[in-house]
View 1 (tube, rainbow, N blue to C red):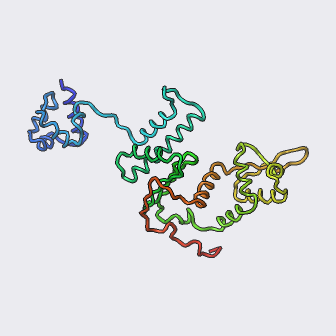
View 2: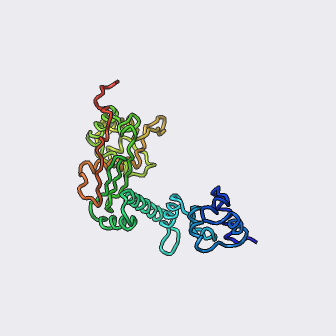
View 3: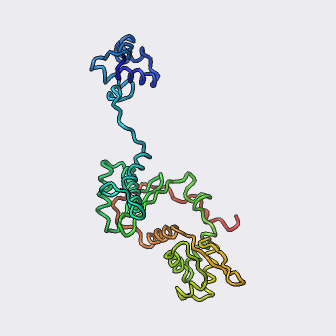
Length: 302
């Protein structure tokens, strides 16, 4: 009866598309010797490394001792599942578990940044970088021809951004090309009280509706100005309109719809006002301009 070694050798050889003659030639024995191995005998111990190398496997696999393989996706799932359990292995439900999962994702992203730098001992370097800068205003930033990534490390505000370089540049027509709508948005955001209204709305439960009187009462904004602000919010789809039936009339009410995008916008606005100066890691290897198409030069309508 064939033993496990014999069965594994025969299976692996066939999976690799190798004949008994080819394996015998590579090892320095006859095809008959290989046939005997596959029927229950064993080769000389000195030949095992040669057999394994030729088949592209580890010696352990010939004896059925295979390490469990984890894909990158499996590893990430495993890490995230572990993150939402406490020290005793109990599953954490609700906000506490979600916060731990998010912090795990953030740390995995930073490990990715360190690996991108080709640094040795990636996990230790990542943890050291984060722990050493939790209370400072520190960043990780890598800029090269492949794009850029940036992470803010301190506890007051953490983020991780990866932006691969598009083939047609960041200002390609489907991305960040100059357009009049962009100009109009910045012009609108610069008007008095607009930013105050957006921040006020972001403080509310996202299911809450409001009207002009809400802005008048909460922010002391003139009703005429409140109406103009809401019209602008509708124009840029930052709120949606609905109707409330009261008596015999329908009143217009509005609901905030910017969601987390305001946080993203304010985060990078803050960074423009206060450019990063303290870096845990900074690599600047880019020579190509970010924008390549000079779309800002084109007159309107062209």
